[in-house]
Image (tube, rainbow, N blue to C red; front, side):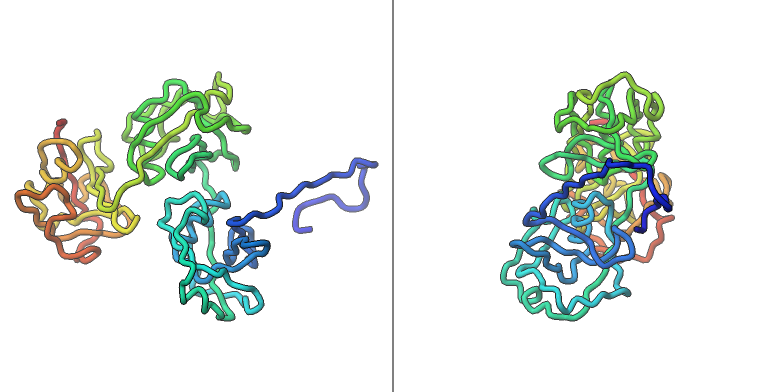
Length: 342
């Protein structure tokens, strides 16, 4: 009744619609009790009934949102809902954020917090609704692989594999928060059924978004869905590093991943010997330093400050520093590094 409709009669005759709904299965997720479909508390289907998931953390909530076809999750710690009559799951769930669905996350069957989850209140989460030109990977065995789809005009659509290249992969994986991987042609992860939004995509590898790369324009193509391209990105390991915002792959703002989130490095005391370690870790040679956000200011956490590397170190995270997240910097001090080809 909240949807728009005509009033005062109809001209349908005997043409009545039929609806077929899926029966929920173990591990299915839903969001309920919110003012919209993407806001509320998380419930998981368990042995024939819906159970509430007590106080999920950000990464677990993010996987639930992803399973429902949304984007990132935000936990609202100011809005609570009464759940006194709703049973809790008999186990707790802990996700690292890269899983495709809740069933891939770690379960703790005897978790005391979950077993004693008898509070009358629980928290809301809000899932991010896809925005214009967002990307996703579909039908893969893990969230970092699958058919490439892009959101345009309020619809997900596929990308044709014509002239798709490793430079395109670099842009796709970076936009999705992964490291560069490979791609596959000929609908390796199945054919889409909606629009083919992009064809003849030609990236330089430096673009922040796939939609910024040269292409034939939205919906203009000479492809069929058996040409849908698929991308396989690399999930970054803890303390992997990357260079962002440079004119080529050998330079850029230095970023490091910690606890699943990319962050920057402050330029305080950052020297050539530190840049050399960075370049070696990336498989390059050389190493010079660019200070004062030369390659643009980053976002998120400034993970490292006062970095001091010594001979023999092979990874930036092994060097001395002020402590993870400990700094007296702003993003206008994000350090950049310029390497040379190996």
